[in-house]
Amino acid sequence: MKKHPIIGITTYSRSPAGEYCLNGSYIDAVQVAGGIPILLPPNQLNPASIFDAVDGLIFSGGGDINPELYGGCIEETVYAIDTERDNFELGLAKLAFKADIPVLGICRGMQILNVASGGSLVIHVPDAYGDEVTHGSGIPPRAIEHSIEIEPNSRLAKIMGTTSTKVVSWHHQAVQNVIPGWQIAARASDSLVEAMEYENHPWTIGVQWHPERSPKCSVNSRIFRSFVQAAASKFMTYTKSA
Image 1 (cartoon, rainbow, N blue to C red):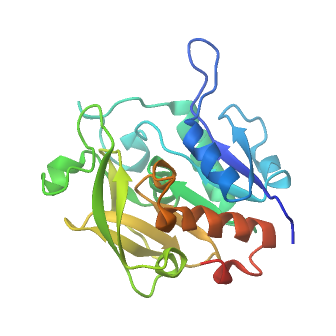
Image 2: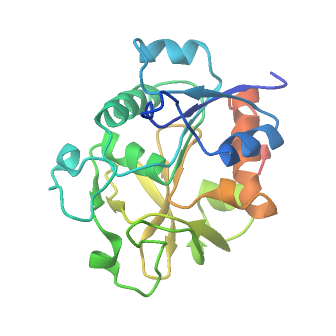
Image 3: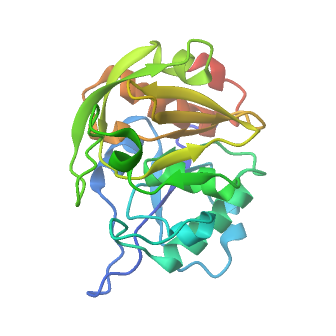
């Protein structure tokens, strides 16, 4: 079993200052779980070669996915569309579904996994779900804490060791339809999809919240621990890591 697996994490596109950026909380969470994080900017010339270098893959959070990519329309609430990042991550996700490594989608990352599978998104959460749970859905979004319910028979429930917990969210878009091949693993009290699992892969999970923003929460940290252990063991012991 590999002791310290290499974990690739997607980043924002190049900034006007020429920098590729990612919130350090992703890096911290991977390191605490025993992985070695490397950043994957969306300027890759050969995305398939990434799978020769990494043992696990995280699709990180960020701006809105262009609604036109899933049959929607760009509305006034849509912001921070990044064509280069959209194209890179959607292509990478399709490759990842066939790869023998664990995959974790966080916030936008879960939405990328869904769109790459042929699913669609809720363009603005308050329009579809109201204000029962805010989800940090203002313009711009801001981080808030709320409760979720996890499906008892899901992989995620086994990993997290609970069927109910509090999470930190920060988004205004969300998964709308989950197509065959995916299983809904968690919902908020307003029924918004909070997590999903890919049935045709040993460890591919998307979560709508930000577990990396709860570094002192033992329940949320189990996601990264299970993910990194799966990357280290090539799935041989991932079910034991929960």
